[in-house]
Image 1: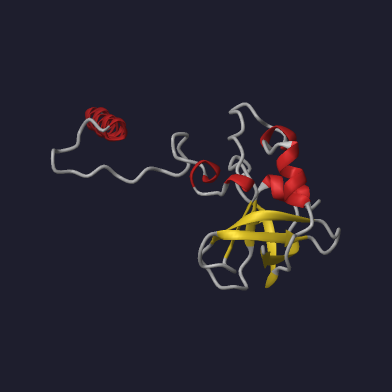
Image 2: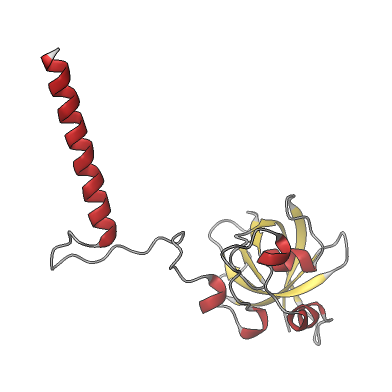
Length: 176
């Protein structure tokens, strides 16, 4: 019986040490002077969202409020942005091909498509052949073969009237 009690006490002590170490590491309290801070976690609230740093002004939007729970609340594009994005292209577009899209992170604001069809960030247009609707988007490179699927922003999916829960094949083109 004494052995069992000692074993339980030792196990509890070790788990408490691990918990304290984990907490102090997250707070940055147990780093040595030469240590380099670990890269930030992209899922932590303080990490910059795509719309805040990389998208051109025509396709950016404000981040949704933390309390947003519906597609309407998460889509922070303005009516003016939606009208401009769905306007017919002024110049012919160069087709990049077709890709199957799914909903990307609904908390990343703006009009964007993360796709392996591009190797650098550029302006493009996506068209839903089922509805004929299209939208200007920022094309963001995504690692993988060109035949891999893509992720699209909530706002762009809504503009082209694609399902938010199903996979949709879209045509992707460079804008201009």
